[in-house]
Image 1: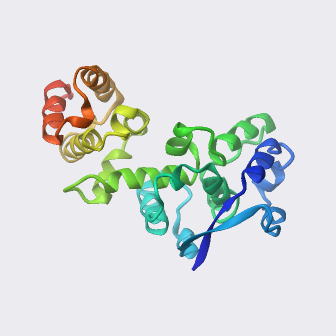
Image 2: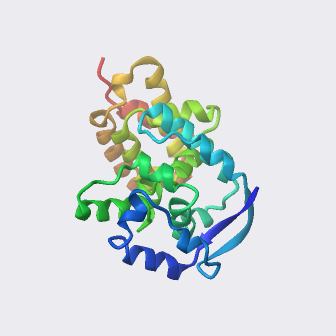
Image 3: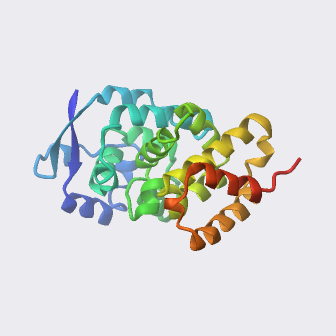
Length: 244
């Protein structure tokens, strides 16, 4: 067991400004020069079993994604939402404990210019969208945490259907009206699960994109946060058009 660590803001800024200089470190090396200097990071009170990170599978199959989300939640499930949005945590992770995983899962392009943009996206955090979608480590935690809140559905079942189609997952998680409203998110995931079991052709962006637009319009009329999950599910069932 070790104490969870965060980089200092000045260290994050330094790393972000020197991606090009550090390309060799990202591709095949490490950032030992950072982590041998205790003035660049600090310990948190939370203790984690860092050995569990060795179970992460660095490929993009949905099966591996589900497994990795569960591992991340097992190790870091105790994070507060405030901590889980702190770029200092996730930048520490991708440059230390999860460096090998991050560069294998998100393979760095050979072209230096493309590599710099790629690293900025997957090894750092630039905004809320980046935390939930792009950072190699934080995206796993957020997907698992959201799915763990779906009542009456095992987390593995929720993850399996949410991660089945990347465009649908993105359309749900990246919209504030869904990812920040637990009743809406739960209803959508339960609908995904129903389709996952009966008609996987329905888990497609052409099905969910118009549905999400309808939900946004409906949310402008009724405050979605105030609606019961059953009411939201009834709206979804009336407005979703699934191919037969």
